[in-house]
Length: 354
Image (tube, rainbow, N blue to C red):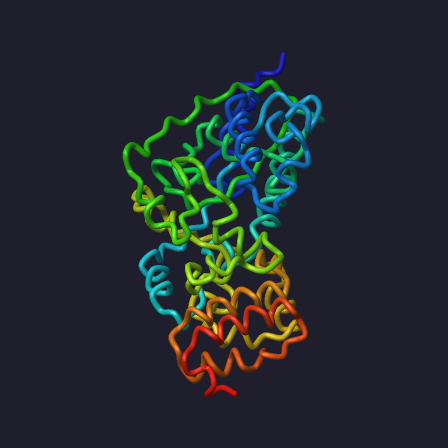
C-alpha cells in the first residue's frame, strides 16, 4: 500500500526545490464557491468574459473538468518587487506609465507551467504513472478557492488570495490528480473590519466585500475588454495602461511580502520607469518584439495604444503629451482614433499639437 502521507511531504520538498514558495493539497468540494460564481455570472459582473460561463460547472467541479480527479496540488510563486513606494510614486506621476507588477517581467504562465510539469515528472518517477493535469490560468479552474482549501491563504475582500506571511504578490498554479493524498487544513480569513482595498479602488469595482464587478475593474478594462472603454470610466483609469494594483498596494498584509529574486520576473524594457509618450511610439513590430514572452502581448498592439491614449488624456498637458497624441490622430484603427480624439479633447492646449 503506497504511503501517500510520505509522498505528500516529498511533493512539498520537490515543490520548494523547483522554486515554489508554498505547496498545499486540497479536496475538490467547492459548493459554496460554485453558488458565489453562479450569482456573479447571473448579475453579469463578468462583463464580456464569456469564457467564465462557457464551461458550465466544470470550473467549480474539478472531477468534471478532469475525470478521476480527487485532489488538487496548489502552489504559490511569489513575484513581489518590494517597491510598493515606487509603485505609488509612478501612479502619482501622470506622464509615466503604470503596468501591473505581475506583468513587468516574463509571462508567469510559461514559467510556472514548466515547473509544474517537472513536479509531475518527479511524482511519476517516484510513485509510477498517475493521472494528472497541470494548470496555470489555462482552463476553467477556481484557483483561489482551491488554494484557500489547500491552506495557501484566504480570499480577501478584493477577491485576491492573501497569505499571512507573504501578502498577496504571488501567482497560483495547480495539478489535478487522482492520487489520494492527505489534504491540508483550509486557511482562515483575517481581513477583519479592514476595507482599505474597497476604499482605494479607482473605479469602485469592488462593489461589496468579496465581490468585484469586472465591468468597472481596470484590469478587465485594459486587458480583457477588446472594445471601447466606457467614457465615464476613462478619467478614473489615470495612467494605468495594463492592469491595476491599487487594492494590493493598499492591503496592510503586504507589509509582510518578500521581494522575489526570480530572474524571470525581473522588469523588462524599463517598464517600471517608462513614460506614456515613449510607449505610445512603439509600432506593431516593436510592440511584438518587446512583448515576446510577456503577458502584455495579451492586449494586442491596438489595445496597447487604446490604453495609452486614455492615459495620455489623463496626463498633465505638455508638449510631449500633445505631440504623442497628435502622432496617432490618424491611426488606421478606428478604436485608437476614437480614444485619441477623446484624449485630445481633455487638453485645453490640444490645438498646439496640430
